[in-house]
Image 1 (spheres, rainbow, N blue to C red):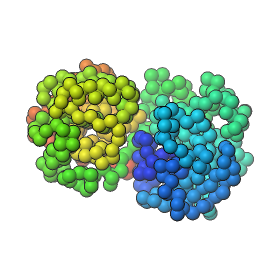
Image 2 (tube, rainbow, N blue to C red):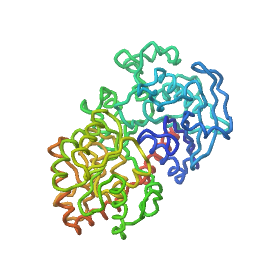
Image 3 (cartoon, rainbow, N blue to C red):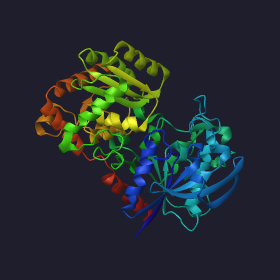
Image 4 (cartoon, rainbow, N blue to C red):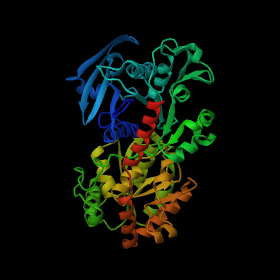
Length: 481
């Protein structure tokens, strides 16, 4: 029997994306379809994706909400069934989807994502155009009020799952917004959506959702500690019985070195020699010369302290002095952008830096680099290391969250057993990162051993099959209760 599922999310790849949340929402639904779960995605119609609304069907006139008219449009695109929230007064704006042109949060984000949550709950309860979900699945703080609105309604409500993609972002707003959001004041308590005198979208969702998931088993355990719980560890300890850590996957069709159109040369684990053509193209792009014999390290990331990239700035010079090459694609904290530009200035012809993001270049970097750095201080799951393994580019990762769950360290035992897929280091310091980089340099010098680890990495399961099956079991269990 087909189960009907509604995703409520602020991002969805390939349409609008700022991080891994979008990749999960865009990739998981189609995989669930093969497991008898029919998924639709409620998504704001931002200016960046306005073209999706041009030939979409109006399936709901939601009247005036939060200062303007609201409609819901239905559109199927890229194999995904979308329910687009058409509210120009909230979403038809320049800048990023969360930030204005000055790089500051939109002042009315509580309304913008309060509407997302409210309509997710409304469609969950009443359906739309003859379609009604059996289960609602809300993603991160932007959809965190969905289970709260479901709980406030008089009508029967479907069960709701909430996924924490990154607990550092909680959606906290002044208590004075409670009225305009239509929240029941009775919920403004320690056992509701109150959080240190504010409204917390995420805490509200954690208290009201029927089940809570997060994006890796290790992150689920970490969230119940003060070091990683960001003030919500007590809530998660209290709800431990309803918390599951289910590892994210990647879209193995979009990320496939055998067919990726962004590569200058496709390859497989049996034709690894072809990978070097991408390394040559990558070095040419960054002006690093034609010699592909030195190891080439990479970073593809938002530049932040969370990602540990200040540690990379400290550790990289030692291997650059030994002849290694390094390329970076990303943007973020100005001091880190400056630091990597300065590193490139100190090592001309050895370091290439591109501030910003380019999807095709990201694919070429995954194929062209020999190793990629993910030295995060915390990482709920991480997708970069999964893509890297898929492309035979060995990840160098800190032992935290999903990084700990997905990469098998190339220590002596793992190398002897033939199961290593990359390099881990702990604790998360520049010194230990430097040790991991040294180990990578040493292994790279043994081409046969390096290629064995590359092939291990490329065979490692990084898709959604196993995790999607676990999610489907959660949905079906909830739908029967």
